[in-house]
Image 1 (cartoon, helix red, strand yellow):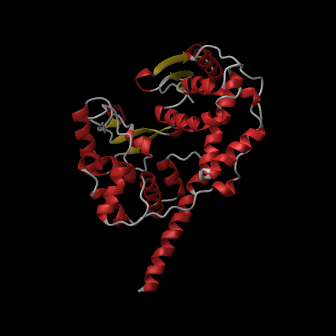
Image 2 (cartoon, rainbow, N blue to C red):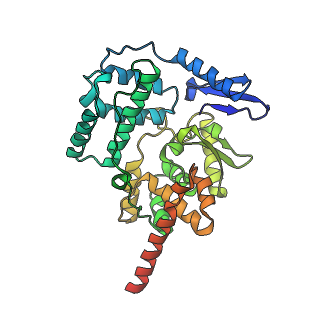
Image 3 (tube, helix red, strand yellow):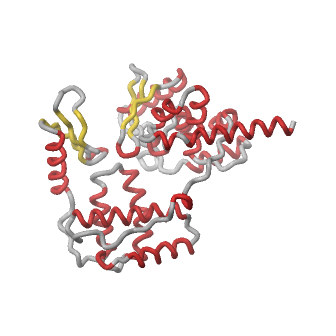
Length: 332
């Protein structure tokens, strides 16, 4: 949500419109409902021109993504754009109001035949649902053209991840090139998501108070402590070097790194860690380590979960690790 209480003035609000350099912060006096109504009016002005019900889905998707930028961070917009690209070949030449439940089922069957996982297909269907909702708000349709039936949870539930030991994580990070090592250390020690770490800026670091302000999913903000002298020194060095902008910036593109998967996989290979390694695994490892000395609430606050049910996965991970430890003892 882009309407938030003003940090110092009671009964006042501020409204964030847009993101990054294009973000506009508007102070507002009045009730929260009035602030929400004002926000909606401003967004109407900022959104593309009125669209027609006679435009094909391909065109509507492009208009929808333009509008999506106003309410979501760049990383979220990029993800939604990728999902919508899969919708275009199948629905692109149709009129939105002509899409039926049968068409949706045919899309699911085609994606399954292409060996796409049900969980990924569900995310693409969420993008289609977002298009329906936007079209209704823009007056393209009076109501969603059909009900979108997704795959059931039992088909999309992710398996409990295999989390390497602390020693294995340390050995992987030690093999990461120096220019990116601090990035992976933050992801492990503070449990940052990939995009949370990549988009960190100088203004997110408060060296005097020793805290880091992280903006995560749903534009939610959390404040985390900077742990240890080494992390503090790394962040201080980057702040002094960069002055403003992204802390980890690519010299080739002039913006933050986009793909760090290769660096992590190569580091794991050099460290001799033989398991599937990906950036989110560092976040899982952080949650598991924290649970060994804290409780679920500590993990929930650290990782920024809105629901404790999401955090409960770490109790299963810990049990899985315990089982592997016990099996090693038996093998001896």
